[in-house]
Amino acid sequence: MSLKKFVVAACASALALCAAAAMAHHSAGQFDFGQRVTIVGTVKEFNVTNPHTWAVVEITDDKRGTRDAQYEGHSASHFYRAGYTRDMVKVGDKIAILIAPRRDGEDGGFIQAFTVNGKTVGFGGLSPETGQRTSDAAK
Image (cartoon, rainbow, N blue to C red):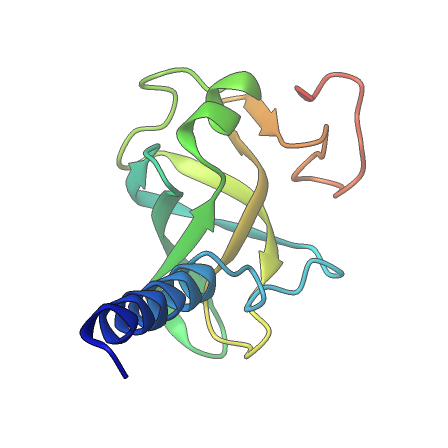
């Protein structure tokens, strides 16, 4: 094999490996979008950033007590188009988040909608209280 063919083959292999890693990173396969669960807790962190927004929320239940759970969401542009405004969510705020839960049953999930300080942001018009589409939730 010539050096030129070897270099082309090596570059193609490296590109394929990088693409596979990027696809795995951006996969939403870990979330069960067929289910919706509302989580209520206290905001510890809320970062509307790219490529994914994420939130850390202190939650409590009878089974496992109080703990921090992390939730992933759409990109910053999705949040702003859905009605999110800067400083809408602050550390210490009580929040209700409608999530697609993790398939493995661990804490966490994908943010579908949330209500904080009387304001609701819903992606696709979903309400965190009902999981249904509403006319007042941003689309």
